[in-house]
Length: 208
Image 1 (cartoon, rainbow, N blue to C red):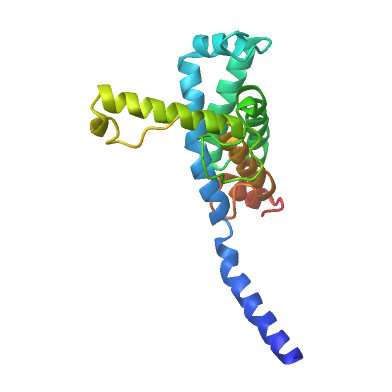
Image 2 (cartoon, rainbow, N blue to C red):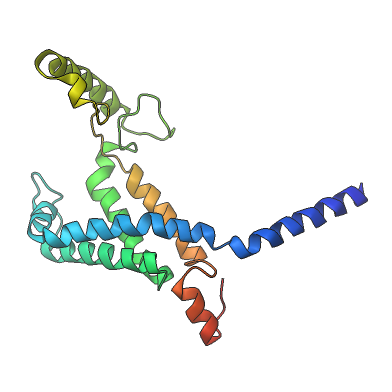
């Protein structure tokens, strides 16, 4: 039994040694997935900062946040500059902290009241959905909208690019991005594939 166990341990250690040079691949893919999303989100805010500030500040049809102009600029610059940092792999552990804060604020202020799912999934992908009532209401509205479109529009043309749905707008995406950013906080930009790694190696700092 000990011989079999030792053999497995050797095989597993060999497997880990093979993976070791590639352990930067995970953080790299996370960075390249998230970076462009934040760059584009930040750029869209920067180019429409007045509209963003109005939405942030209006309590009736917006978020009702205090200091909306300041908040709009902070969100826009955090997303844009943070996204660039993720793509380049520079200052990753620092950049993800304000991005995580931005995602947490977005989840609480803009999405929490709509529950978890971004779309009204009739078959729940997560068991902790707390607004199933909105899913049921969305299904009724979708069926009504589809009936109207079939009766008064070219439904086949309208659905050529994808099926018709109703946006539920829950915290799903913000929470997912938060978790991905949290992983980068602990992993850093990744071995060999980030500027952070080469700066740390050049200056003699501990590297991942």
